[in-house]
Length: 164
Image (cartoon, rainbow, N blue to C red; front, top):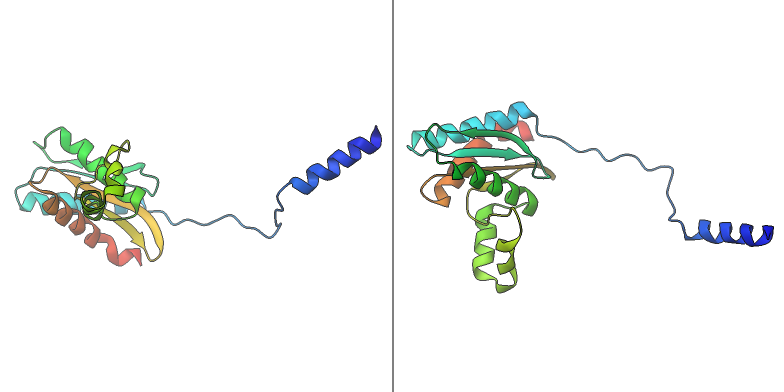
């Protein structure tokens, strides 16, 4: 009986994955909330100058909200639009205008529009520092996704020098 138990333990140990004791915890850069707010404010201001009433959302790499701003008088739908554009950009690690184009031109990608929380419309831009993915900024409410994206880019431009 003892030999059977010992044999089972040896077999079990042999099936366990080898874990190196030299492994270290991964280090992940984070976008500080102050920078997220600064980017959101700059994006909102860029749209205000054009007369657009929008909402702006900044998310972390997992799509979790870091900052949200809504212009006075912006439609209630703009909150969800900006959040979903930011989430889509963070999740896909791409500008949502690129995702929108892919959905429109690649039949194999058409199902993307049915994935919960994704919104493949222009206005979301990823935020990165070199090869590190820090999240995304999304804008919703301007009269066209290209205008939403221009405001999002203004927000990104405000902080890009400190992302290096």
